[in-house]
Structure formats: C-alpha cells, structure tokens
Amino acid sequence: MLRTACDLSVIGAGSYGTSLAVSAAKKGLRVILWDRNSERARQMQLKRENIKYLPGIIFPDTLKVVSSLETAVRSSLRLLVVVPSKTFREVVSAISAFVSPSHSLAWATKGLSSDGRFLSEVAKEILPYELPLAVLSGPTFARELAFGMPTAISVAGIPSSFAAEICELMHTDTFRLYESKDLIGLQIGGAVKNVIAIAAGMSDGMGYGANARTAVITRGLAEMVRFGLACGAEERSFMGLSGLGDLILTCTDDQSRNRRFGFMLGQGKTSVEALNNIGQVVEGYGMVNVIKNLSAKLGIEMPICSELYEVLYKGKNGCDAARSLLTRELKAE
Image (cartoon, rainbow, N blue to C red):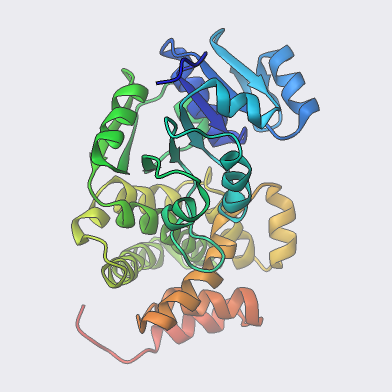
C-alpha cells in the first residue's frame, strides 16, 4: 500500500464537508479539506475557519486546507466526497485522474444524479479501478456536528468491510456511525427526505399547523418506502437514521434549507426568490424533478412528490396542490 501523509481527504468545503473534516481532525486524524476556490482555501488555511459556511468553528491543528485536487487525492488513500449531487459526477471525474488501485471513496452527498441514477452507479462508471465505495447518510446538521453535539448516522459500503472501516475511522465520543448493509436504501433516504421537507415547509408556510405537517411526514415516509422497495432497497432501512431519522430532522427544524425553502414558497415567494434568499444549494429542488420522473418510470405512486413537482415546475398554486392531496380517493393506510 502506498504511504500517504494524511488519514482522510474531504473533497468539498461547504458546511457539511467542513464539519466532517473538523470532527475527524478533532479526533487527532490528519485531515485534508479541499475547496475548488483557491482564494477561499487560502483564507481558511490562514484564518483557521470557514467564515462563509461555518463561521465560529475553529479548525484543529491537524486540519489542512488546499485548493489542489491532485494534492488532496494523493495525500490520503481514503477520500470522502461532500459536494452537491449535481456536481458529484464532475468532481468524481476530476478525482479519477489521480486515484490509484489502493484508494477508497466514500461520499456524504445526499441525492441522485440528474438522470435518476444512484451515485454508487455513477462512481463505478467513472473510476478507473474497482475501488471500495461507501455512502454516509443520516440526520446531521453541520454546525451541531462541528460543535461536538451528539450525532448519529449510518454508513453502507461495498465491500461491507469498508463501511466498518469508515465507522471506526470517524467515530468519536459524540459522533456515532452505524454500519448498514443497504447501499441503495441509504441513497434513497437521503434523496427523498429533502423532497418531503420542502412539502412540510410549504405546509407550515401556508399556516396549516402541526396536524398537517405530521401527515406530510408520515405519508412522505410511505412514499419513500414504496419508492425504495421498487428500487431494491430493504424496508427496514427506512425506519432507521437515514430514513425516518433524517426525514424528521429535515422536516421539523429551520436549520434545514429544504424546509426553509418550502416555508418561503408557502408564504408566496417564487422558487427563484426563495433560492436566492437561502444562498446555498437546496438539494430537494432538483430532486423533485428527478424522483418524479423516476417514480413515473417505475410506476410508483408518490402523490406528495407529484404535487410538489406541479408547484415547482408547472406553476400550480400551493393551496390547490394541498386541495388535490386532500381530495384524493379514500383508501386504507
């Protein structure tokens, strides 16, 4: 095995990538954090803080920030990609120029590719070697993780020994990682929960109350399970951290960009106005279109996702969408 300078290279210096890098470095691991913007990387290395995305969190001494992707990849055999789903293919393609057969690749990106493919499929297609792969998914707000507040997520990988390795590597006194066998289920949970969170936020923005929000979460979970089973996932996965856990977190707390986005829509803002107000990637916005198309292809009924698609992409009024859901044909739960 090649000798490398660091224990982990985190590719992507947004709020979540930075928090994962900080958490690992606080444990004493030697960590590289990569940012594509050279000036921002230089300022983070100098100021020891990600002022744009995670202000107030001081970097441990064992965390180094770079803007050279080659340096980041060649510095560690363990790579953790934390970028928006829409740039995952581009970033992994760039990484592929520098990886060796000894590398392994994990990601904490939550979503599917724009053509509805799993990110595990995208990575396998792009990488020049058959590397160990793993996905991290679960209820995690970046700032709480970076501050060392108790957090738990799930990790699934191929082979399963790599998932176990990631769990051991990143586990701390306050960050607990559970090994899962369901690579597909974890990816679906991370994608669908963002869509449902937009719907829950819209419901609250329109003033519909706690009863309606709970109904959206519960029926949204049912949609997630139906979709997941059609894609080959295990039902029990959606009752865990990457399914129900992440769904509750994202639908009920205003740290969630997806929930805030939906809330603004419910108050009458346009999608463009809401996105500009948030100023960061809202994963659920693109996933609405992806999951709507994929569920239609699979013949899976996902009424919340379908109505949200009509609101975001066809200009349907939010109140009319809610009325459509409420007046659907009665059926058993």
